[in-house]
Amino acid sequence: MFPLITPQELHDELHSNPDAIRLVDASYSLSPNGQPPEYMFLKGRIGNAVFFDIDDVADQNNPLPHMAPTPEQFSRQVGEMGISNHHKVVVYDQTGIIMAASRAWWMFRLFGHENVVVLNGGLPAWLSAGYGLNTDMPVAPTPENFTAIFNDRLYATMDQVEVAAENRNATIIDARPNARYLGLAPEPRPNMNAGHIPTSHSVPASLLIDSGTGGLLAREKLAALFAPLNLLPESPVITSCGSGVTACVDALALSVLGFDRVAVYDGSWSEWGQVTINKPFVKNSMAQ
Image (cartoon, rainbow, N blue to C red; front, top):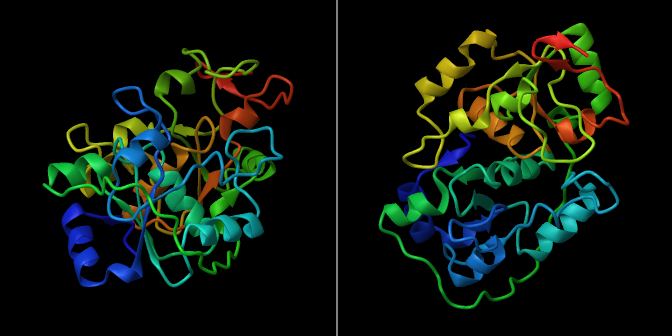
């Protein structure tokens, strides 16, 4: 299904069939006023949205940040949010689309739930369209049964990325800022190499965002940004970033363009770039 929904479309669906929809606030970054997203969620949300914390719905035994949980954990936590396999899930975030509605969208699909869309432009777009917020204290949802089925076609491991880099059997796309891709800017985490995965291409997630709306660019503009990669609809793609969040923005944009063979490298540079792991990397176009 098409992965985006507009504020008008969401407003209409909430009025015509509200019980069929589950709203999810997957905000991750601080609000413009510096408040944590959980606090802003309590202050106001769309309808009866639930809060989806990508650090909580994650593998707590993995030292890497917010790695995907097991299907069993995802089933339990999503069910506790009142979401079943029969619901249409609409994900949004408080700052637009990049932190981290796209990540939650990918996670639902990773665990077999294709009936999920992202509110294009997120909460700002909803408010700009003239729609209001629910400012009552959230009510605990009635638990539902959710059965997760892991879709390994959407998930890439470090070994699979290494094979793709060596054999070029998939196009690797790096969603980090170009300066980090080139190794010209320091990594935010300690003990990390600076540079990028060999043979990977830079398509920063920030370039895919319309600065005016906070949503994805129009389809023709997205197509122009990916055009240099000469991708075909059947082309296998792996997206990567710093820790698997903005890689999902690139995956979402590719889904808008009709590419469905897109996996996300969950560990991304937080795994590959570790000095102690010592994987090959390219800096300033020179292999290291």
